[in-house]
Amino acid sequence: MSVIGKDDFVSGFVPHHNHGSVDYTGMSVNHVHQCLDITSPPIMTQDGGHIHYTEGYVLFEDGHTHHYQAYSGPAISVGNGMHVHYYDFHTSEENGHRHHVKGVDHPAPGTK
Image (cartoon, rainbow, N blue to C red; front, side, top):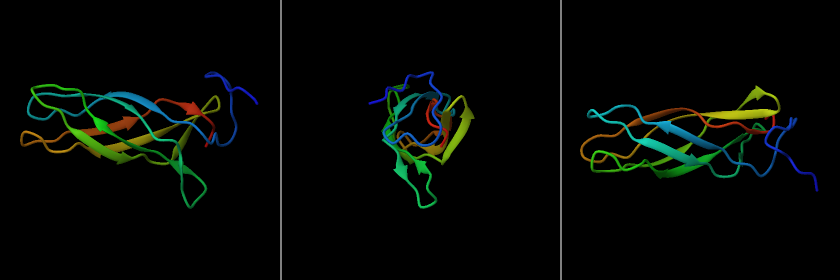
C-alpha cells in the first residue's frame, strides 16, 4: 500500500479523494455567510473525468442560515500533481433572499 502525502506529486486520477473549501457567500441584504465545505468522493463522468457533489448549510449570520446542494465543475490541474474544481451555485431562499457562492475548492492529489 502506498501512502500519498499532501505534498506528493500524483500523476493521473486518485480514486478516493475529496476537497474542502472555506469561502464567503456573495452579499445579499447587507450581509454575507461563511461557507465551510467538504465534498463527496469523486463522481465519474462520461468523458473519463470527475466532479464532486456537496451539500450543507452556511454559517448562522443575521439571524438565519441557508442550505445548498451543488455539483462542482470538472477537475482543473494546478501543477505539482494537484487539481481543483470550480463551483458556482445559489443557496436556498430564507428571509426573502438567497446568496451566490462561487470559487475554487482546495487542491487535492491527482492531475485529473
